[in-house]
Amino acid sequence: MATFAISPDQDAVLVELHIAAPPERVFEAITDPRQMLQWWGQNGMYRCTQFHTDVRAGGSWRSAGLNDNGQPFHVEGEYLEVDPPRLLVHTWVASWTGDLKTTVHWELEPSSNGTLVRLRHSGFAARPGAVREHAQGWQVVLGWMQAFVENGATVDTRG
Image (tube, rainbow, N blue to C red; front, side, top):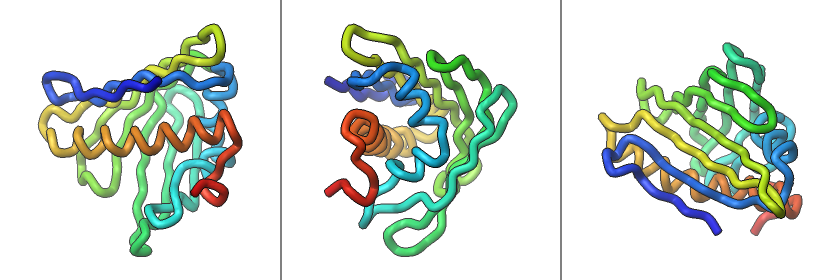
């Protein structure tokens, strides 16, 4: 069962999600650009066409694609902490939010039958509308990632 919340100060999206796969598999799905292209997006919504990752502290990452109207978008950042398969922290700057720079903190904890994923996406205090949009977005995106890791569902095979 997943829980999605916004912190009381409107600064962060808080998520807890169980995935029926080991932390190593989940970490791979969120850091390997070949895998990310397979699951991050949906026909009729948007599609990522490029992912670049340099998964090390100080390394950069960038995704780019097209929305359903054919308009380009990108999201990019820098890895701040990398401790596979337990922890990944990176900045997040999305083309649709202007100069807003936020931080995504992934914790992957082994559980009896998979991984407890704790995600905290923070830095929205000055833009409460953006925190709500990102909370909705993470619900969708993490559902895609879970379906990919657990069942092999991709952008092309999902309904």
